[in-house]
View 1 (cartoon, rainbow over the protein chains, first blue to last red):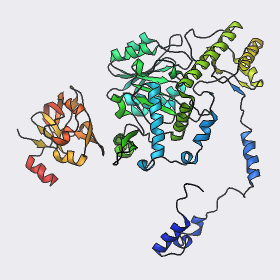
View 2 (cartoon, rainbow over the protein chains, first blue to last red; view 1 turned 180 degrees about the horizontal axis):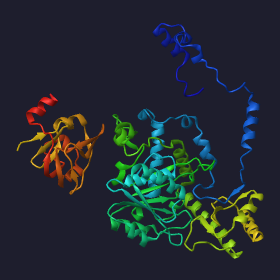
View 3 (cartoon, one colour; view 1 turned 30 degrees about the vertical axis):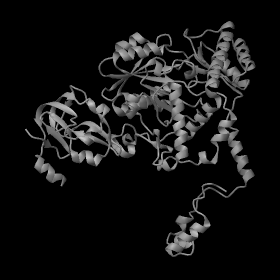
View 4 (cartoon, rainbow over the protein chains, first blue to last red; view 1 turned 120 degrees about the horizontal axis):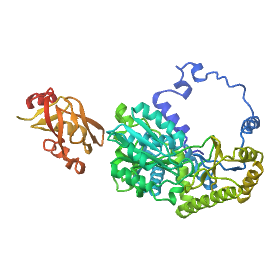
Length: 431
Length: 113
């Protein structure tokens, strides 16, 4: 039997007796029948098999490639089956947003563990319970930084979709957004430094950046510290396991997209916006934060903390209108990280590097040329290659993302060597 | 000049500004004060900082118009000082240009009675 049957027959009978009715129908007798049982225009009923067939015919319209060599924000990593299995447990899928939070210790504990893992990954002091996606996380981070100043700099190759969301946020918050062009695919630190005046609140940079390159975040962090502005680090959770952490390079806020942590890529992903910050900025961190404390019997327990700055208390003066978190996606990320472990995550990152560099090398040997010279993680920009992407469709492989006349390729730990060799073959033939 | 009050429960004593005993009692345990910076302009009747208690975040209004010349950094580490000693726990010191509508101690006591 379900664990969530709200009332037993016996309890219903007791309650009816208490208010002096014989049945639930009698209790609702005053409500017109067309409200209780409205006519809903959804057609006649169908059998289970008919419904399956109909849904399958719709699902078959999707094109699911056998291999994916495209990233640009959403990544095709292996998802251990235990992630879906555990996350599908009844207690997890029925848990609702904690409006009466402390009664739901289980969901609070799962969020607390997720937050702990995000802090371990980034080295930052505090994590919130998550926001919608990486783009929202970056935009909220900018708003966090603009406490007494109203200008923000986005520098280098930051995901253009994130910049779009940031523009919308900044428009509404009357923050002036300055975009500093990259230099050879990387942050132009000199140019960025010159753009900083006394109204600039923060500098935002992404690593690995949108074209896959690993930025010199340490130098950017040094520069922002010396200039007295905040540093927003947009990170990738997989590469974060091997690169210096955002905390190590003086980031004030570290945000990222958590889809790569055990979430599928359905229509651009079930997304997860990761937001972490220093303790000094914790009161400006939007959304829910779960804290650990002890109850009146001295037992470990969990509570929503720092709620006083949130929308339901501060109303229009709240820092953010974000109240929601992606609790179920955060749970999946947490299970994923528990499943692969510290060592496993580093191995995944290493495989991403090995395989993507293998493909890049093979393409270069076959006459290809990378657009940028910098070090990359698991994505690289190939000059041209659009014909190859077209040809690969016939091989049931989703090739790189066309960006102007070039293509942005991503190789995670997932594609096999034969898939990568097939790409090279098609590239040679397309030439 | 003796202590005087805004209707919104802030006090002015000399050049120093804080919140009243009544205000701290209503707020409950104060956990954080977002202090302004020296050099900031404040305006009579307008908010210049926020005080966060376990129950709520509240705006603190300035009794005067002027420029902040000192902030009580000690409140960063001990915000609860406002609860224990509301009339010693000043938040800012202001170079005063003009005053807002201030009540005497007697009138303020009547207001909160």
